[in-house]
Image (cartoon, rainbow, N blue to C red; front, side):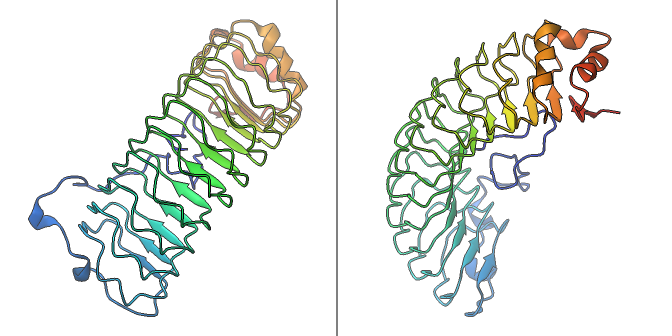
Length: 329
């Protein structure tokens, strides 16, 4: 993801790091004398399975050799520039390096049991040196400087991939990620939805804040339940015929003028269409076909300027529970 995924008052997804997190005061470049050594903040217990050193102003990963049973290592919001000195932590399942100063993925080959790796908010330019991590389930690389999706072919067990807020222009090289259920590519420079046909298990696809102009090439994603396409240049709702499991459809901040081609989405519960160009009530009335629809966002569309906007929308879809950010009475 992500990317911030938090829009139109919806709850952000907890495990997508594109949800903005507050950074501690003074994070970033600091004077040399303010950098803390890991040995000064860690109490070594050889039996421990979890170490949390978030917000520690730590400058280097070191002195962890006794922790051979360690399963979870959290090093968020520090000043680490290099991934190193982890070779002995072969039991490690989770490694968080979110918001540091890391420029390269390296020295991870021995962490063969790793299931979650988070290197978001760093200074990475490439995805590389991860081929040994065949047990990885979740990979978070958002808010870096990555321009190519590459070197992921060995991740047959990966279920979540977060590449939001990078410099990616093309969706590619994902064919082998057969277990992927969540893919976050928001806030990139992607111009076309493509090369997703092999991701048959995908349930959540986020392409918010890109350069898309057309909804297309989603036919094979028959298990998709969440589709986020806000902040693009899409003009027409189309090509969703096979996506009958969709529960959430986000098209906010696009150029759509008509609500159409969603009558078949019988599972649809949330429909976000704020900040578009819908001006005709006749197409709004079509939402009556979506019997599970609970939430609709249409604020800042021409129809929303109607003094009877909420009443008309509730008459069209009596089972609505929320219109825009307000619960229905």
